[in-house]
Length: 305
Image 1 (cartoon, rainbow, N blue to C red):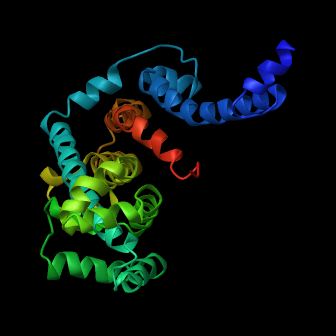
Image 2: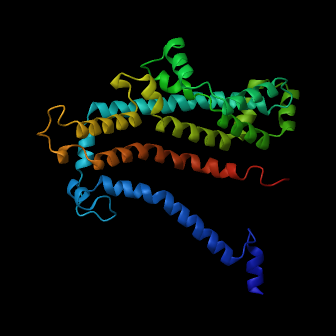
Image 3: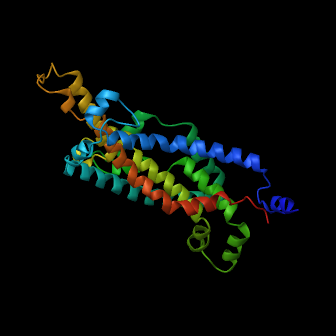
């Protein structure tokens, strides 16, 4: 009888063996996601001798802080790149979320006469793009944003996928009757948006903000296209430039007359992994602040009352 009561008390109504299998699969998937990052951390703390002797290994011969010392010895270049990435991510995320919510709110309103046109417009840009050359011409020649942080922010301000996600979330979480009641009470569109739609859509906004922040933080391609001033490099592009410089020296030591340089003295893979850790840690710290909103957003629309 106790077993029957225990079974009835289970919320998900899944048998115990099935639940064990599900937990095992999810656990393995979680390990597959986290193990590469742990591997990167181990390599970043491995000594040069260990990397040369055993290569990449979970059990290095010896540990060392040389890679982090080399990274911090970059001085102002590293910290300026950090600052640039924080500015681009913060400002870009803030402006992008505002534009996404405004656009999505219009698409979610059934009484908006142009919503089909703007829905087609946003979906069309998901399927067909202008191409690389027109994008470069618009940013450089038309807008004149070369060698500025604005060149890293403007191209990714409005992401069609985020607009579709936000529109769907608003339609699922904000009843039309609630908006209609606000209108009858004399509330304007912006007042309704700020006092009703935005508070009810916090999980969706948090999800879009997190996706946008990750996109800005990991972006290096726009810097490759539009940034020539080293003081404007974001962190990701600085890492790529360093790796390219090291590879160039390794391939052309004889041509540049640097035959007296010991390859072991050049920044090794340990420095690259140390920079990867320094890049990943800030954005990883943002996840706990968004987690409760994202988890809450998963259940929206799951229960029909």
